Amino acid sequence: MRDLRSFGPESAEWAEVLQLDLQEMQYPWTESMWRELNFKNNRLFIIQDGQQVVGFALYQLSPLENLAHLLKIVVHPVQRGTGCAPKFFAEQVAKLRSEQCTRIYLEVSAKNETAVGFYRKLGFSLLRRIPGFYQDGAEAFTMEMGINSSI
Image 1 (cartoon, rainbow, N blue to C red):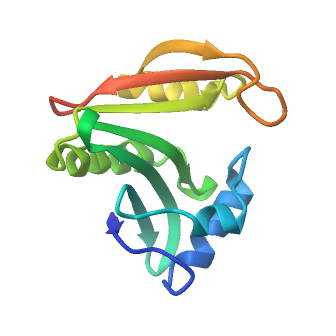
Image 2: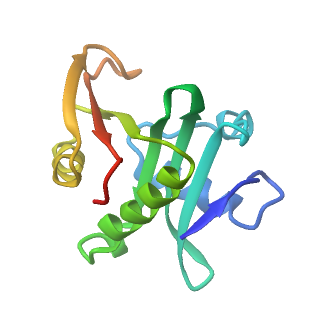
């Protein structure tokens, strides 16, 4: 896993991360949304198979709350079911913990049963439902987990 503290069009991974987002996310971001990220308050973790990016996770950090907001996490379909995703997530948790984060928060489409199940297995708890959260009117679940102890 690599922690990209500076990420933008000049980085070698830019096109691959944006392509994974476009191909695999139900609600991908536009390139301009990616360009607006302030990496002082965000962390992008990537995993690679050789030189190819096969997964990423993007967090927005709230240091005053010791909170990491998981904005996006993607693992390429070829890597799914290999045990790669839980290992990748455990590495993220260790890194976030070292930055004094004590909680991870996320929103996930209520329709995405696979993702909801994955998050539950990792230790996330359902906080609430948000009707009409996504641009197509879909409902979201908010979930959270503490990261004080190892997963």
